[in-house]
Image 1 (cartoon, rainbow, N blue to C red):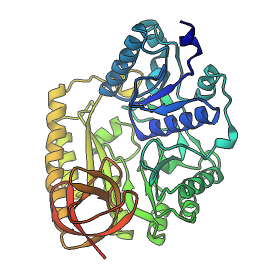
Image 2 (image 1 turned 30 degrees about the vertical axis):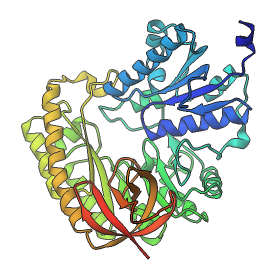
Image 3 (image 1 turned 180 degrees about the vertical axis):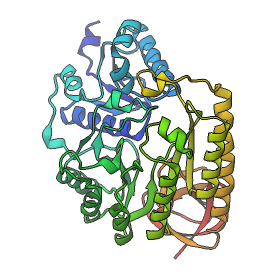
Length: 437
């Protein structure tokens, strides 16, 4: 028993959900280690006696996965395999009282902005000198950069403002410092993320200042690619596209969640736009930058989506021919505006609609990829998997988009390096390439 109490603590951080949560876990990991605490992220070993679970509370499936993970570690605690279980993140922020009542074995629950309180549990201080420094939990050649926190949008289906609070931009100087630190550590690609990246700067600079931020980050030596995610379409600042056009190290890539292709459903979603406005925006962006790859996400089955509205979304996808598309089924989230509406569409119908949209997108993606055969692209190598080196072009983000597969028996590539690859073959979602000089 005595040996047990003298044993030095080992902390394991487990992350659920999106890249924004991953950044939070990396910041926590950096602060813990900066305080001399032995901490790791998703450690493969079983000798960690303190577990911190960073949860996701976005939609039903994510919530269930987070709860299952909490129960798994609570069970390990009851068996004496771990000493303490702490829970943080979106699920904990949103359902703290319920969770405390239902899972009392958890030692403490924290919200999304409770980092100092977590550190206090370890008798650790928040070290301001570590701001801008972050230990990465994946290959160091790319890094997510969270440019703001929270969201002020009133979207009917979304619980993010409940979990993450209102929009708060990070100052440009702080983000530039972080980019310089990352570049010094070998990072070549920055993926800019936020709940709403196009709102950046309104709170602290009294204007949309995303274009200026991108210029300043583009000036950082060693950063070869800057990639923009989660750009809200309403009030989209077109100077961002002008910056993409003028700067070689800003990827011709835009992640812009449009959510639907029916004006009536967009109104029910409280998106502040119409199908016509969205189409005009996409056309305007492509007019300025014809070479851009546009990724969007859509929701199938929102309250008010009848066959007519769904067909409008089908037509929208067929017309717009997005380079990248993801489709989610609507999740009826309590405390959201849409929760007051009747969730009358059966889950199987929602899924059928989502599948139908993705079948259309598969053909669009296949046709676009066929056009790439014979062309040469700059490719960033992410990993070696099986018999292939796996990389991405500037038109593809990590984990969600197309990949370039290079035969490892014919070519050697170093992970984290750029190569020039000629596309020899293409499927719906993958390109096959050969390294050329």
